[in-house]
Amino acid sequence: MKLSVIGCGYLGAVHAAAMASIGHEVVGIDVDQRKIDALSKGEAPFFEPGLQEILTEGITSGNLSFTTDMAAAQGAKVHFVGVGTPQQKDGYAADLTYVNAAIDGLLPYLSEGDIVAGKSTVPVGTAALLAERVDPTGATLVWNPEFLREGWAVKDTIDPDRLVAGVPEGPTGERAAGVLREVYHPAIAKGTPFLVMDRATSELVKVSANAFLATKISFINAMAEIAEVTGADVTKLSEAIGYDERIGRQFLKSGIGFGGGCLPKDIRAFSARAEELGRGESVAFLRQVDEINLRRRERAVQLVVEGLGGSAFKKNVTVLGAAFKPHSDDIRDSPALDVAVRLHGLGAWVTVTDPAALDNARRVHPQLNYVEERDEALRGADAVIVVTEWDDYRRELDPSHAGTLVAGKVIVDGRNTLDAGAWRAAGWTYLGMGRP
Ligand code: UDX
Image 1: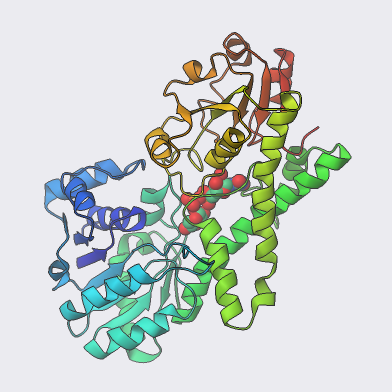
Image 2: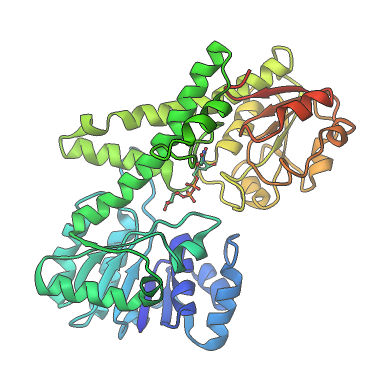
């Protein structure tokens, strides 16, 4: 099928390449000429396993192209909208400028029977407003939220847990759902659930999924706070409650909390939207979820200071990690970098290392010292803190070897990812988050 994808950021670029890889003819459109130039050459604009391969494959086969010209959308049967919905600069609500601009730009090129499928995460009610502009052209506006995780984006797009289609009532909606079924045929044929619902529900599915995940992480981090004053160990607690299938083990990892381009801004936008709807109290807990999350960053800083004997001033601190999670070069709202910046604010000499995110980090926080190589970064440190659980810092970092590089054997485990016993046995002062 001929498809267009408006917006070639994380979501759009992966979606375009993934749709081409399952046999569709796809044009990706973005206003950013540099991004389009890179993608047209088959270069992935960010670190995402598997993306490079399907980009090259799509471009070589002729199934995939990129342009800044919106007119190229004309003739596509489905137009996916995957532009960003960042947090507003002066508030918690989502900034819908890019979504509105994408729809405005697309309108002149829509034909009778086309489907416009929104993928961006938007406040509930957005699709209904956009439909007022799209539906009069004879096209149909549907919502088809995306649940991809960074680091797994290609797999999550081609082979998702579930597909959600928010469609209007009646035959128009049924027809639109049918077209999306064709688009996603390979996944559906493998048994992926395809859930058809109204547009508002589909918008809510996405924000509530992210709100739930954020809540789960803050729940375990709240338990870490209690563990800290009782001598309990939150990692053991997490393991023990996680065996209950109703609770589950995933997203119960305590530490410096969540960050990234989705969870923090999505729970804030959800709170803001609920307030607008007069139901602020229904999701008031999300404010606490956010607060718990931010408190853990401060706690990690406090542990470094404690480890250094009460002050970080003019001490060498090595921060292992900058990305908001491993297998990503994304530093948007990264708890790891936030911890580094806070330590710098206390007068520490902060050295940051990361296998993928250093260029991005350097651009945003030029005040920190960046070192590519892990062992080089560790040399002379008075304290070390692990803030992103890359294998290079957990499995592959030997405490005895690390001990020969540093000036002070103090390690703070900001992700509760190290073997505390092994580090202590090698003579280190080990400090975990919510662990004795
Ligand atoms: C998230 C959702 O998982 C995805 O479904 C949605 O479409 C977009 O937002 P992503 O931002 O890629 O995806 O990151 P995710 O893997 O969810 O991790 C988010 C943050 O939570 C990371 O900073 C991670 O380190 C942290 N985290 C995750 C924890 O602190 N503990 C956990 O147990 C899990």
